[in-house]
Length: 287
Length: 351
Image (spheres, rainbow over the protein chains, first blue to last red):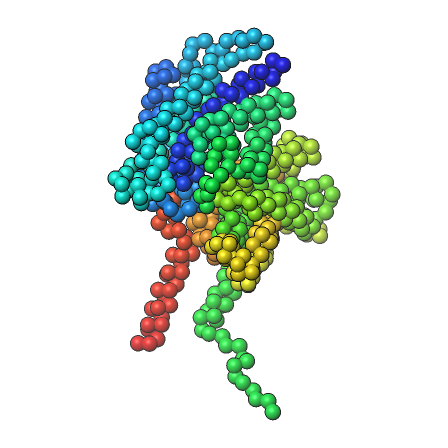
């Protein structure tokens, strides 16, 4: 029983990190139609930048978010803009190329020695009844992720930028005719994706170590995105949590080798039986 | 009464002749290459030819039929482990291993292709991503149960008692294999089937309206290309000397996609140019780094002191540059150069 509860609790914590990255994927996919394969690299760079600052967790994470948001925004202006309307393949390949460049530059800048980042809260974990332990970093991850989801959802619905973003996503020409500037709107979307990835990267770095390999965690964000429904922010977060819980349960009861395959089985099941995900709209077609 | 018409005699134009002569010359050069190259460069040539044999079937699937797949490293793994099982456990030889790998590859390719009947775009891509990890996981299980943690270690290649493990022999074996792959794909592309693939890529609803059986075409291409990639996986494992599941990463799959992007989507010549280019770039960077990247007075000399990172960066830049500025790839450059030459020659003739 306590194994089960521990797996579920850690799964929710890790899953909310996948959800954070998936939020960034959804924001970019929703607005520009680009499936962002550089999320892992952005995340790793976020973790590395945060670990190199060395002023406690919160300041370091905030700085990393600013830096990676700038990288995301610049990437949009420099290489994503020419791809609008060119379909799936070019976007995926350019983001893969971007990931490659980021990894190379980060390798030179930060070296390959793993570094560490402080925890957000001194006390590493606390006990709950039924022999369950909660890592405070995972708790912070969960709270931060839910907050980010709420802030983004409200921002999408209630702010001028959010309205323009949704308009530009569905009909860029019409939105432009009404005064929205798709270039800047999409740049904000990329910056937001970068900031979210950096936040997830910083949290992961404080949970494990800061090096390029933590980018591999972003893989689960794709599962989270599909499970939640590619165009739903709340869905992405819930999808992330579901992926995290399934992954840790598989890890606990089947062995660590089964962690990634279990998330991929979940992804496959959703693709085959419910491609619109839990909360996505069924008519979304972006060939 | 019968009349003999001159129209029956096959007409060979000057350009066709030039092409055939060019092809024959290229084949002769390709076969003679290891006689003039050092073993180091022979190995690089072998890698390039193998990269072509892997990229060309992927190009048929992605470039010609429009099915974007991240699954090719998984098919290489399927080939490698099928080959390992056939040769190491069952004691059969390479030809049978190639056939068996192709058969298993075709079957799994059919399964991985099934979602393509329902899904498109990002969803289809995600299904190939899931397939990649599931196949590699299966490979890991198979490796541990059959060969142990170190992986399947291949002996030097021998067929019918003839030792084929020298650099030169390996090169020729892989060259012959790549030649067969190239010929098969060339014939598919220049037949009605090839036009059916292009139609499915352009608009599958319209293709169906033209009488093309879209579902069948998609599944056939998925299994055919997967069969060829799996067969190439056997040779790749022999070249490396081992099959270990850690080798079959998503990056390996992406490397083949990079080749067809750089070379040119939907073109056999593009696959060849791309394979050469993408194989040679890291070699070139290593050379530069060896010559100029050393430490000078204990001071590291900029970028060239980090050849690995530099390779990663250049690789990314190349992919982005081709997608944005030259989507038709190197073959597009070669074609426009060819047209310029043709025009220049034609112009000279008419002058």
